[in-house]
Image 1: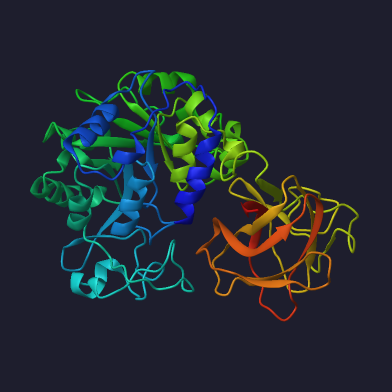
Image 2: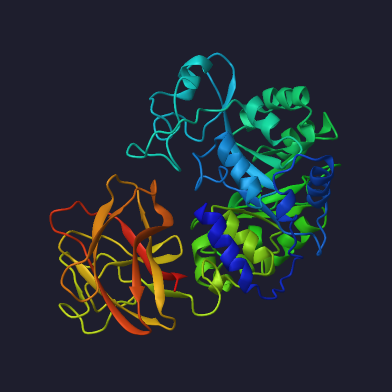
Length: 470
């Protein structure tokens, strides 16, 4: 698979990394194994909260980049890719069964419609999940909606489970965990009163509980009687927020782990997955160092696992040496309108090169060309150090089908026409192959043209050339 191939390439460029936490992970060869030894290590790591506590990775809705969110396949892929914790969303059906579904309705993620609470288990089981993060234009897959019991049986002995959306049905979830022998696998979470949370923990010493705090509940740490939450999930949108004040973080770290979400802005100020891929100091390094996060929930499991293992994020997704050439979307050629680019609509974003007409926007930390329309073009220059056959790709995102079409013009006025596929979200940036081209050593110019007669609605993060043959 392409993701495994790319991961293998980046693993060859490892660099030493020091942070305020110990960055360790389980060997890749045991990532999917359901063994008592593997899970015992994960569970022991969870209960360790000191300064040397290993960083643990939580996969947001599973590995939705490979399979539909909240599917059994996404859970398995997340574990394969290095996550010790898989987040799932639990909701009750009309007839009292628990299923995995993030939204109140099945509309976004399946080929059906209606509220989960208004549908029976049989009705939901008859539906099929949509690719990735779903959306009405995402492809329908063969995957179906799992029950909570099916999910816990699939994860048993392999990983912990972050039980999101489930606090209202915690008693029912607890009964399922007991019947499947996975009470010590489930990480209950919520923002109830301290008294309510403490009472629930008191019913079984194996219950694992994480308390969510924000601006309004920053004073909660240190107020739990008896057994403390195993972790605190901290939500903050400003570095000055009281819940991330040094004194508060120190109080949490005495008895619990620090969990921070890095998926998008507003969960951890601006320290996101995509910002991390640009510069580790803009994301994961700051969360682990400045804020003491030793549990990070992510939409980029492979990249976070690579970084945790000592990888240099500036080399992530690249081959060693000069075998990969990457040009950021905003780094189109100089010269202005009609020379370096042609843009037809008013500038909607001014994150970079604000004096020019190209819409360069911030996508949760990624700097990308947005609002691409038919008839526009961008010129890029590549410095190729090694002659050979290259795979030309673009990191793009779009929730539409078709998302767009591009023509790769290497100076002839024409070229290969390549479709842009639906990635299921404007924020789901994905590297997509466009063409293979033999290139000599030296400078090459590529004009990326968007045909006027084709629908265009996608975002461009960067273009990449990977040497695949001589």
